[in-house]
Amino acid sequence: MTTPTTTPAANPTATTTPAPAAAAGAPTTAPAPNASGSLYVGDLANDVTEALLFEMFNQVGPVSSIRVCRDAATRRSLGYAYVNFHNVNDAERALDTLNFQNIKDRPCRIMWSHRDPSIRKNTKSNIFIKNLDEGIDNKALYDTFSAFGSILSCKVAMDSDNQSRGYGFVHYETEEGASRAIEEVNGMLLNGK
Image 1 (cartoon, helix red, strand yellow):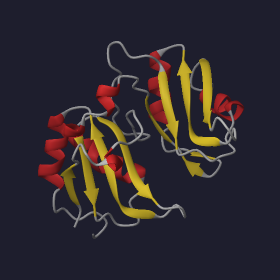
Image 2 (tube, one colour):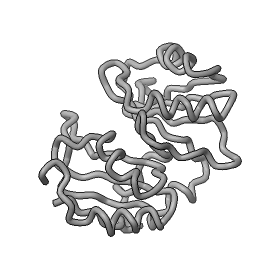
Image 3 (cartoon, one colour):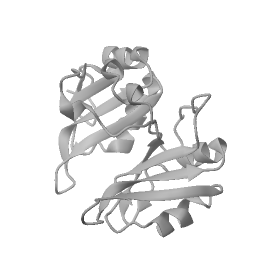
Image 4 (cartoon, helix red, strand yellow):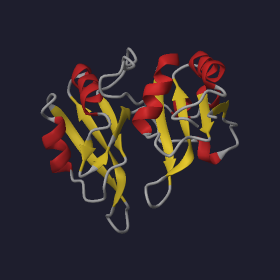
């Protein structure tokens, strides 16, 4: 059975990469009133370049800048990037249409980039889901838990062979969303587990 629980603040693995997620075709969180058009793009292959991301994201709307984050010493990609749009509506459309799309044969995770650390560190709206079936991926986790509130971040933990470790995290915009998910999903079977 899948068991969501609140994640204790002291658990370092509970801090996931900042920002929200949305599935293609699923309802998305509207950006905050003072939101920028900045998106976090994660789970990227090491050989994904700014040029490739520009080609993909610029089809949605005019991109102002892209930065693939790299190790300072080796210059090797860290597997994530920031894509900045001139217009917040274009960023929202990119989130809606490109999230979980394959880039170099790997599904990317797109979320709003939140620079305010208090949003990322709010553990009261972050839940830990254990005993996940190996067939549950980031998109399936998002699709299941988005019914309970606006999601900031959603991730299934993977091992070095890109296989599910059987647990994941969902960070809601509000504590109410997290509480609703715990009440509704605790003990529920997902994919027969």
